[in-house]
Image 1 (cartoon, rainbow, N blue to C red):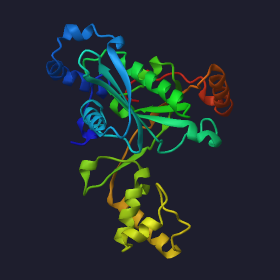
Image 2: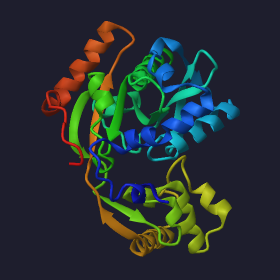
Image 3: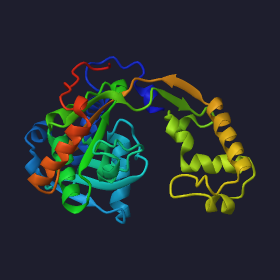
Image 4: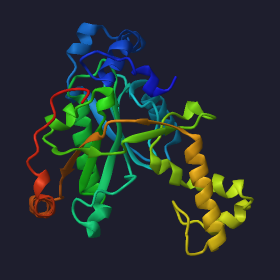
Length: 304
């Protein structure tokens, strides 16, 4: 079932992510052998935080299964880069996951010259019996790890009003709210592959889609590979007549897809440097470049 179909008639006052926790609670408790009373006594100090390298295939597979069961989108994001876990010290049970990813579109909140400082908190979920603050503890721990071990300094995240999300976790961590103007206002569905779900217009320009367009006009795989950069075509290398045909295939495919209007997403960001001086400097840059985004009030009404 498409994730959007699961909540198209959803009319409860809490978000869909919380509804998943409620639905999974009894089964999750039975699986780990905890009573509800025992679970309610758990604190973040009862968990271990860990970074998971992409070469750890076994744990990466475990994370994928966890996201599919406990995260409302139910799938790994595009271009994942770092993965983090929270495990119960008592028995090493996986209780929470955060996945960072390369943004589909950089925010340039610190200027175009600093775009490579940005990382997207793309997926996050905690198991049904976890303490309420485990999610925020895990996000915070993940961000601190990133700042200590990488060059990333600004972290962005989205919450989806369609799933009745407000970004409560980010509000609790005092992240900056950037408004509700982010993301697409239209989504598409391939009627031949409905199991893939709804996607944004950016997906028409994904590497895999361009490969499909090229195949449709008879371009062999090796030739097309030579015309590709890492994530997109190198248009300077592609003959003009082929370029026109590729664009026509893109429009043809777009026209074949169903479409629907969707509300824009709430967006949050957090800036953290390796030192207090670096943090102050980066936040000063942010304030100077984004004066209208420095004092926005957090959203409080769900589903808007």
